[in-house]
Image (cartoon, rainbow, N blue to C red; front, side):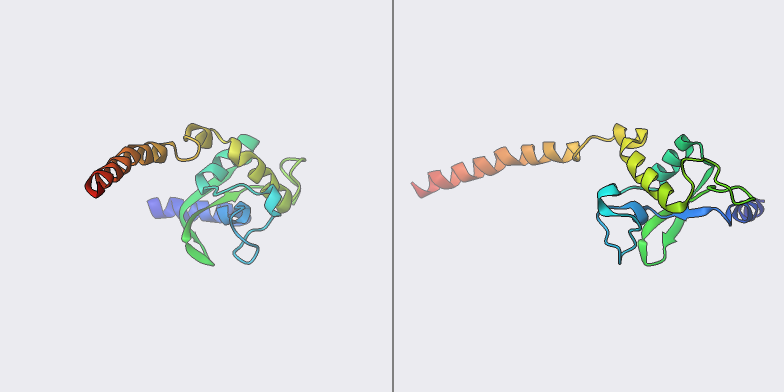
Length: 148
């Protein structure tokens, strides 16, 4: 039954636009798969964030977390987005084509609620480094005592 539902969903989304996170990643080159200019990109977007933003824009989307980017199999996840109706007309007038969609997604991903919830700059890492610093100072202090 699960397979039938998956097959039906694949048929429904076949003509939708496919967006891999690498398309809007500022840390990637054009050769690696980036599709828009670097100044318009965002850093390290995830398929989940792209899906979330597409839904905020009012576009129907489908997250395919198990799919990989063909050029780099370590890049997991893609999103299928319903951009145009059966007549080929855009669903949203302000997003008429794929390129405009990618720029809009890259603009909104950094503002996504899931990204806002994460601590900026890896907040947990700073505490660990701070905890190690006194130990290093103490070790240096012990060396000085031994040298005297």
